Image 1 (cartoon, rainbow over the protein chains, first blue to last red):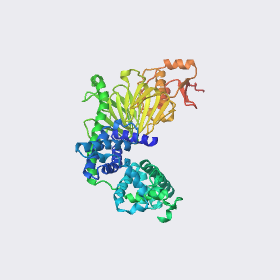
Image 2 (image 1 turned 180 degrees about the vertical axis):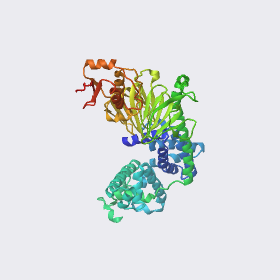
Image 3 (image 1 turned 30 degrees about the horizontal axis):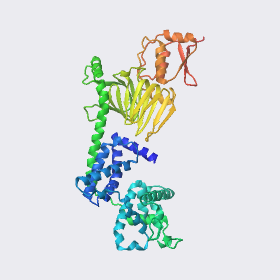
Amino acid sequence: MAGAVHLDKALARKILAGDERAFRALFDEFFPRLYRFAMVRLGGDQEAAQEVVQQTFCKAIEHLDRYRGEAALYTWFCQICRNALVDYCRARSRDSRHVELFEDRQEVRGILETLGGPLADEPETATWRSDLGRLIQSTLDHLSPRHADVLEWKYVEGLTVKEIAARLDVGPKAAESLLTRARVAFREAIESVSGTLELLGRPMGTDPGGTEL
Amino acid sequence: MTEDRKQNPVGGTALDTRDLLGELIRAAGKRQPPPASDYQQTLAAATAVWQRKVRSRHRRRAGFGIAGAVAASLVVALVLSQYWPAMRAAPAGACDRIMGVVSLRSPSEEDWSALGGEPIEIGSRLRTGPDGRTGIILASGVSLRLHGSTEVLLASPREIELFQGRVYVDTHGSVRPEGAITVVTATGTFRDIGTQFEVRRRDDAMRLRVRDGIVSLRMEDRTLRGVAGEQLKLDESGDLTRSAIARDDPDWQWVETLAPAPRLENLPVIRLLEWVRRETGREFVFDGPAVKARAFSTTLHGSVDKLSPLEALDVMLATTDFDYLILADGSISISEKMAASE
């Protein structure tokens, strides 16, 4: 983590020094992730998401010399985005409860418990699944881009390890190793959202405390 | 999927964790990229803010050096106008030596041109090709030497902004605070206290080598000091390592080829030896006190223009009764020539 923050600080210095390549690299990496970050919290309103993310970038760049490496640069951008979201909603008298972290809701933890259980296919869980989908994508966006990409390639696009290795221009062992690390990172991220991953293995009807309902 | 499920000892079924992660990601589907129009609109706005930010930072840095040197540069301009009557603007300095491709862009010009012997205006940029080298005498009297693939801005006779590459500064031992030279980089500002030093910038990594004197490096969050014989390396993450570098390390040799030649006509041999010592870092050893005394009293004649220090030593001593020998440890022994035997 310390190494990643040092790289972030180096990137920020390059951008402030006028390095256009560094600026574009940052923008191209952060824009899609912040856009999805904002979309989730604005109920899918694309126009609003674009406005909030634009404000986020402008403010972050204006104050980039204040970035001291207290957290990862993307996390720092997210904090600015959260503030921009609140300001946006206040200015338009929108219900800013939409802005609260989705992952903080108790229902999210319950969603995870339904996976694989007998009620998984019931119609009333459709909405929950949609919300869960956005949660998963948001979690992927918080991983390093490389980790997020290999997980999508493997599980969404169905690529083999060999195909992933070819895409990354690395050997199969390196690709397998990267995939393992990506799974660990994703698991840790999900655990921080939902509590322990052991809950996912519980039979339906069991609350987090282990008591039968 | 069912083949991967494990039996739960208490009666239900539990998914293998790895499969469950895959299930989650698969269920979420591919993350959608934002619309291209939103990307372009945001990029345009962010770029405008970024460019404004970068310009304001550059203006702030140049402002300190230029404001401080305005009075000095006016005086320098008056003095130099005796030698350069065609001068239109206050010079930051002039070129003393050129090797290979060296280009100049004056503040009023958009294009680069080949550097010649003309005065270099304040605010000019200099750029060397991969094999290019140049030695500049700044209006402050300081010797500035540029290695290959180097680009600098001469913000004033005492402030240089280094964008990329390697520069060597020799202040000829001046310790006056007002005569200090600053080399500005994105990482920090190097300031000398009567020195010879080299700064190299490669992307975001920085290296300072101090050959003589002391150099301070002021950064956003700290100030570092380098002393003679020391090398400081800052990598892209800002981590610092210190190591030693000898005055006569072969890595200093590139600066010798750009050393401004001193005027030695009617000056004692010792002046030549002092110059060679300063430029090469080599120590002199005299073959006895009588030889040393003669170095103070023997007068030189001729010019060492365009000669490197060791070439100059060879050429000049040939006109005297002195001989020299480069010893195994790199030092130079000075002795009297043996009389030719019949």
